[in-house]
Length: 141
Image (tube, rainbow, N blue to C red; front, side, top):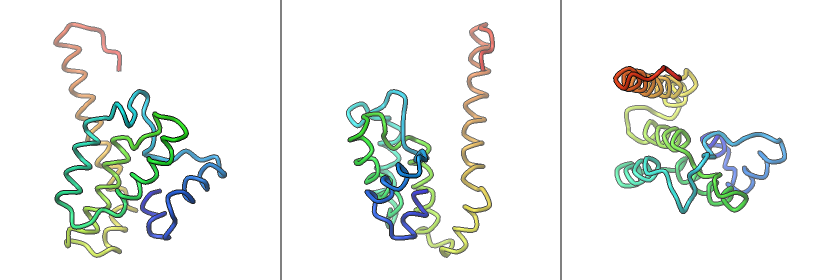
């Protein structure tokens, strides 16, 4: 969503208004307990890394601008770790020099981001499974 809005030249406020009018959730925005005052440290670290090491971060910048708007409505409508990773991944692919924009877009359209998220969730699931067995607890996931 952020990438498409950036590519279309849509401003963050117009994007948020459009999503509200269409009654669509903004993917990558929202957390159950985290707020700007109580941030997710993973998001903070990823943002800092991208801003320091990437040549440019237009999608991340857009996502952070959206966050500034959505948190005025509700404190928990922050950029979450999945949204941050997705925005940074697009910026990385488009800015690293290994792909031109059309190649990066094709990889994204083919689901490479979904594969990245599946890999991360799988590792987490395996960790929970091992911990629950180690602690002789019933498996709850």
